[in-house]
Image 1 (cartoon, rainbow, N blue to C red):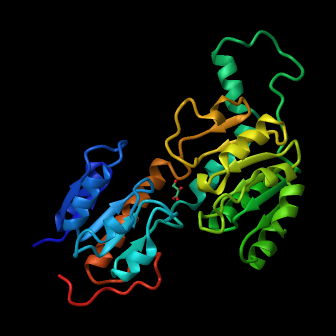
Image 2 (cartoon, rainbow, N blue to C red):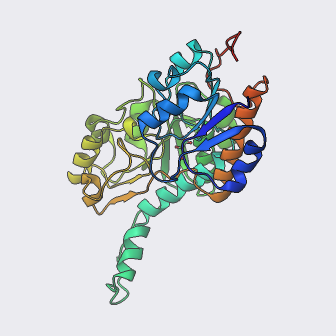
Image 3 (cartoon, rainbow, N blue to C red):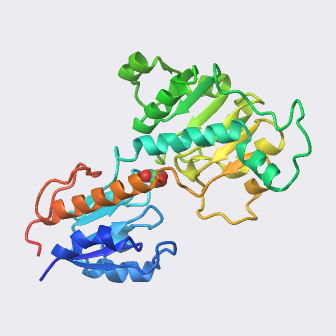
Length: 330
Ligand code: DGY
């Protein structure tokens, strides 16, 4: 019997074809509606491999639903939606998609920074609404980026690549990370700074840290109150790193000047979300890595990882480094 692969979102046929030539492949019928949990569990019961997305919760109930599951390939660099401990216990390899999305996600993060600082969305809506009556000295005046201080919280590959973008704008770049990055300091001229100091000194604070128990709700009201009143906060990592109510209150009270958000605590958000009522918030639907080229590369990498595991080879991008395949399994 051919190994069985379940894919939790509808993907373009041309991309799935190579997998179909080797395996039995079943795919959820929608690309924009999540697969219901009971369907996912039923599929996991029979599957040798799952191809998942960050909106799927791959918890114990999914990982222990069947006996054949050998690999979960998650279409994201982040893997906070997956129970890694159970996966390793069950001999299930968890794979992600780092590297191929670094530049694209850094581009989007920088675009969000620029859009928020220079009020691009507000300005475009203003023109489309026919509100532009005449040239005016301070019409939709925003904040300069160049020669300002950029604080990056979370200096992984994406953080470093955002810093690289910042050097092109002659920015003074501070970073905070669990571990220091001497190489990045040398190459990019970035300065390691304690979290509180970074928050106090930066004109723009970009959050790119992964979601872990340590970073959950890292950005509290107290943290926002330490920022400059002119500061702009950007989040392109995970929504749960920020206390959203605190961010709303800080923006409302004028404690910071604006926010650009690609991620939210509970996605998708609806139009009545409090943060969307504020004119100084630019909100995006979690599209950090969403370019056609990069999403295609991410899909191919997930498929390559699935094939490697099913062929008994090392996957290219393994997350749970303590993973060992279970012996005596079909
Ligand atoms: C990721 O890969 O974790 C991103 O959030 C997806 O855009």
